[in-house]
Length: 615
Image (cartoon, rainbow, N blue to C red; front, side, top):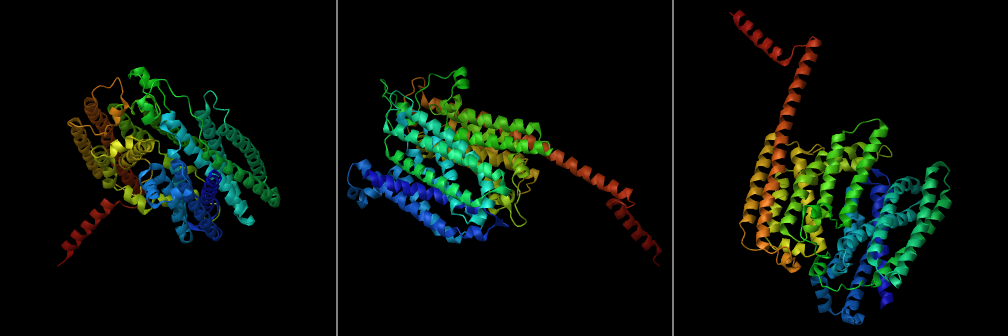
């Protein structure tokens, strides 16, 4: 049964990687025609359909064999309809595997309908979500370092899928299309390679860094994967050398090199499937049981002090990976402008850096650590993620920087990466979300949906739920402050008076939410904080009410600052408009043309003169 389990996992991984690679080639590597898929890209749709079905089949087989392993029964026991239905509807791992299998089916069903680049990239995002969904159940919280292990594995899988999938797609492309696709893929492959090596190293260290951890079958397979990865890095270096001499490339030899690389990657994926079927070595059990480790994957920290909050660190690898990528792309954009001879305001760079630092402090720093154990600290982290950090990010103008530095079209018909971003900014989806009412509803309305229902308690129970909350806080804050004080392009031109009304509404709604939380007489966490048995937190209700008062104080100040910034922006816009009118009048006068007011007065004088001369 173990061999069949490895086979189905291999089919799932290979199918998913090939699906992602083909979508990547269709939407990003090959040329497009004004946002429509080129003929070369449309030829890949049959392959996309086939690999998506293989992915779905492999994922469904993984469901069956995973259930059989859990039940310690033959496959026939896992095929029992009642047992199978319970697994895929009530058990989180089963739900995630089912989502993965359905993702493959959806992509296969839509494969032949793909016509536009944006639709293809949307399916690529869906494929990545389907791929990483089961990863969130791949590491037990009781093993410790939960956020570091899960986050590093998610990054590893995503980067590996882009790298391996891209190589598979390059190998499947028509030889005449490779000169277009390979140079762009090499840029992406370098970033993916760095992420694969870094995240894989971190994940191996988390799982094996204890006495006896490296003397196991699991460790030997990890070492073998490292050796194969080094071989792939060497081949990737040869690719970059060949592409640097693009006019002299022997494409027949290059094709053989790609085929060898695809074969080695296939072996690597097979070893990954084998590795996922092997139980990682268990860490020694601590002598003293800590319920916090079993529930949250983090041992209970000592009572909070200022130094502990400032200097403690509990890494959330996925958030760190996202932040590092954002910073690297921002720095690259600034360097591109500098080499071009253009200047980028230093204030925007500082604002962006402060925003990123605030996010890291609220997720992986001491504040992020204590946010798992106390509602009041959770609320501080929430306010930083949703109110303070977004202001720095928005004032850093990352979209403007991207539009000035993203790759241009490769021919006269291609929309290109920059054109695709512009099309997305002016799409109906962007028009909908930048509506001030929608932004306000997501920013403040979601507070009531989260904290005054069972949703908050349920999401705090899992790493996935906690991660989703943090991302929601951040994105809703970015959207709101982008609409109110944003520097980046906005598909809507929102009058300043409307912005001020929305800001006042946000202040009122946020104050009402905070007062309601301060006045609550029941706990809203469904027993989560109580189950942690934190020794330095005695009164959970008082801590919850303190969180409400913190939310009121920390929430009103950023919104008030946004109100002041909106007033200043309004005054500056009026001043600029007045200066523009004055310049037009001066320009017209210099050319001997009367301004509009003078022309109107002349018209009235002519009418009066005509009336006087009329009999």
